[in-house]
Structure formats: C-alpha cells, structure tokens
Image (tube, rainbow, N blue to C red):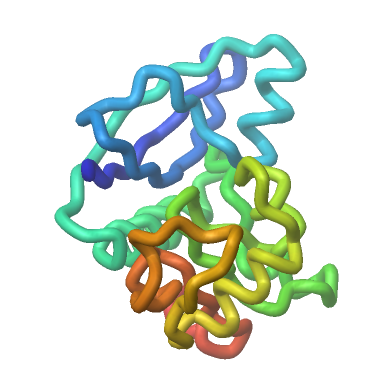
Length: 165
C-alpha cells in the first residue's frame, strides 16, 4: 500500500487544500480529494491540480504527517483546510474518525465518503476498534480475529485531538 500527503491547488483562486490518501498504486490518478472544499470546488467547475508532497511508510505516520502539514499551513489565508476552532464552534465535533478511506470529523461525513458503510458502522468500528472481529455475514473472512484498529479504523476524541494539533 502507498500512503501519501497531497496538495490540491485551485487554478482560479490560488487556494490550497492538504489531504492524505492511501492506494495500492503509487499515485492514484483518479483520486482528487474528498474534503468539503474539494467537493465544493468541483461542483463549481473550478480547475484543481493535485501534487503529491510526501510519501509515508505507515498509515499512522500518514495521519501524523497530515496533521503536521495542516498545522504548518492553517494560518495561510489561501489554505482552505478547516481549523480546530471552526469545529469547536459547531458544538458537534466529538473527535476524529480514522478510517482506511481518510480522517473525518463526523461519522456521517465518513459514511458519506465510504461505499456501503453506514454512520452507525463507522461509529462501531472506530469507537470499539480494539474488539476482535468475530465471524459475521458482513465482514470478509480475512478480517476475522483481527481488530478494527489493525485494519485502520479508530477514533480520537476531541480532547486528545487538541493535543495532536
């Protein structure tokens, strides 16, 4: 698996968005980002350019590097990544839901981005990430006996996430 940090730049405005992605190929040409701003810019027909800025060896390293890159750039007026203060204002932010498909600020946004997964499934996998996966009709046999954390699913609550930034 390849893990990388990318930067998306809007040709028309100069705005930049930093994100992370993991893929079985070195640079996934079809993945253009899944953040709210990226989706908004695509819907507006803006021209976006993706540039890979760093590769990582592990998913955990990737998550840490993404937070570091965002922290370094968050005060740049052209950076459109959300800042923790914006999440705090809503009062709904509980923490980060880490999944193999990305990090999300709500179980609903994760479910919207992940095919065939409900918000309650995201919650169960992330919050109860250290429980062993038992045989069931929804999960492939290769996952049995592992934990969701081993498969890249976990949750970091609001208080702990403030320590990461």
